[in-house]
Length: 138
Image (tube, rainbow, N blue to C red; front, side, top):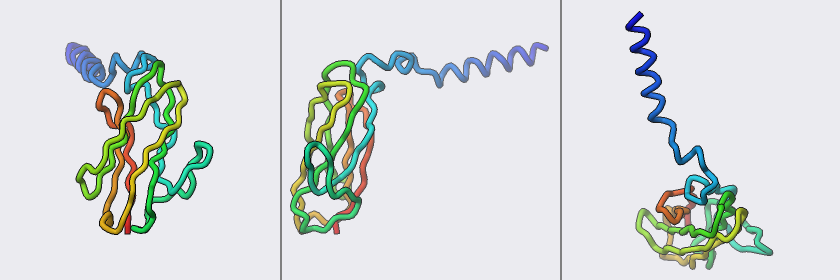
């Protein structure tokens, strides 16, 4: 009987480590309340809609966009698009988020020297990586 009680207490304690008090109140505008509804790399934008999305682009593309639709912000905040080429940070763009449903984007000039594995991290104001987009320039 004592073994069952001890086991039950251990299970409850173990489970308590997986429950975060921040997640219980996810409407405070913190990173835990932000949701990335859509994040894509594209060749252009038209009326806040991404055009020519993909994950492989030619080195003569010229300019690429990282489009992000963010929901859940309870107050004005910021996100950052961090553009990496082969693991090296190439650009960091701070972008405002000014409503509970917000579309924003950053751009990056692409040329022949930019062939390789690319990644854009979308990072909250608190430094939490909200999503990562991988793509390739050939």
